[in-house]
Image (cartoon, rainbow, N blue to C red; front, side, top):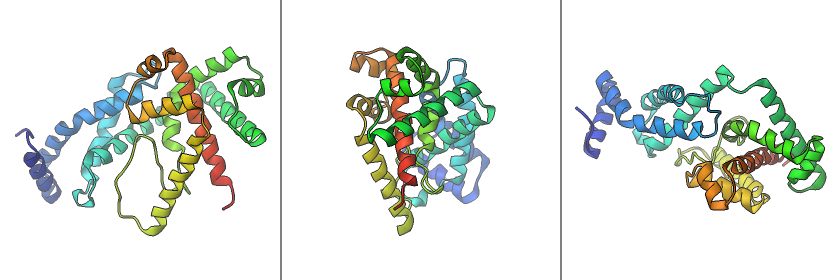
Length: 258
C-alpha cells in the first residue's frame, strides 16, 4: 500500500524499525526517492556535462537506503535532513572513487589554494583576482579559465572544508538538528560556526551574495547571474574563488595555536 498521509508514514516507520520488513523498507525508499533526484540535480549543476545525472541518482539511492536503515526517529530530527547528508555523501564518495576530475585540474586547484593562502598570509586580507593571477604568473583571462575548469570541484571542497579535528564536517547545505552530543562536541561545533562566520565576513559582498543565493536560496548559477546582471560563467568563477578562499582561511585558522 502506498504512503499517502503522515499517519501512513508514521505507521510504516514504526513497523520497519520494529521488524525491519523488506516491504516496509521498499515503501520508504519509494516515498523518499524524490530526495535523491533533488540532491543529484544540485550536485550535477556543478559538474561537467559529461557526468550523467542518472548515474548520480543511482549512487544517491545507496545513500538513501543507508539512511533509512540507520535513521532513528527517536533522535528528534527530521529524516529529510539526515537523508540529504547521507545521499550527498554517497554521491560524492562514488565520484571520488571513479576520479571524475582529471589530475591536471586537481593540480590547478591545489596551485590556486596555495597561492590564496600565501597571499593572504602576506597581505593580511583576501587577495584580489589580479594578485592571484600575478602570483601564478597568469593573465586575468587565464585565471578565469582556471576558475572555470576547477569550478566543478567547488561542491566537493565545500563538503570537506569544515572538518574540525577530523571528527565533524559542516556544510552550507546541511544543517542538522541537535544530536544530543556532549559538551565537548557542542563546543567544537560552535567554534566551527564562529570560524566560518569570521571567514565569510572577510569576503567581498558579491561573493557573500553568490554563496547565500546558491546554498541557502537553492538558486542555480544561471538564476544568480540574472540577479547580479552577469553571465553564468562569471558566477561560476565567483563561486569557485569564494569556496577556495573560505577553505584556505578555515584551514589556516585551524592551524593557528589556541
